[in-house]
Image (cartoon, rainbow, N blue to C red):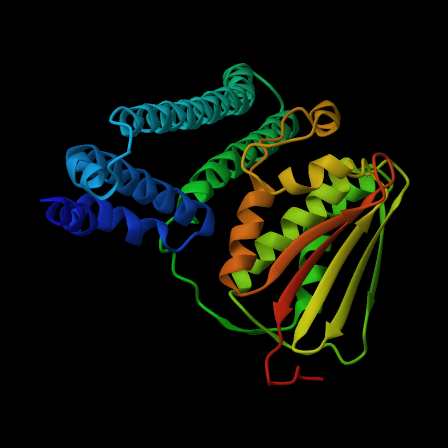
Length: 320
């Protein structure tokens, strides 16, 4: 009977599908392992209590109530772990709803105000300025939707279209994209590269978004009039991109939390209240899917930080 129960739980479609669904992501894979372990532990407790007479036959001096006491102790500990886990899940849900509500309210309010202003009489130039503001606000709203949907997309079997690309060109694309934002703060870019930087094997569109995220964050958290250093180096079969700023920096205890969803340091929330804490987690998932690595280093708070991206090299050479 016991073996049948174990076999049933192991091959039950719900558990099996959950295992397959979570297997692609290590964090979710750990969740699947947790539920499997919990199920097997409960089955083991039930089996030991059911066949306790056999144990007493092997060990005549075995205390009759010892199995029950140990079982109750394990169940109490398991209940506490499940309670803490559920509490953490509810906290994440609350943070998600709070962040999403706040993020959507600001651009929607701006759109309503701009639309109402268009209803009145105004000169053509003024109307065009309002239209341009509408484009900016609607673009911001689109970025929020992309960030929130990206959180779901990178948890599913999203397809990647790998090709060879030159990372130096992608750096230039991002710098041009955020040039106005950097100019407003008086921030300059210093890009250095090894002369023989090779092509890399990537999904160009997704890695471009990773570079965009790191450059935009560097600009957002850097002080006015500072410099952002971007460096490309070859390291064996990999190319390493580094993005160094002189901004907030990272406290030692925050390094392990930096790429978690919805997490933002207290200093980051003060410097940029509108952030959602999603971009770095999305970047990490993209780089993972490429077989690469993303990490950060910092000398401490207010000492700047350096973000690194490690990507595989292609056998092809860039065109001169």
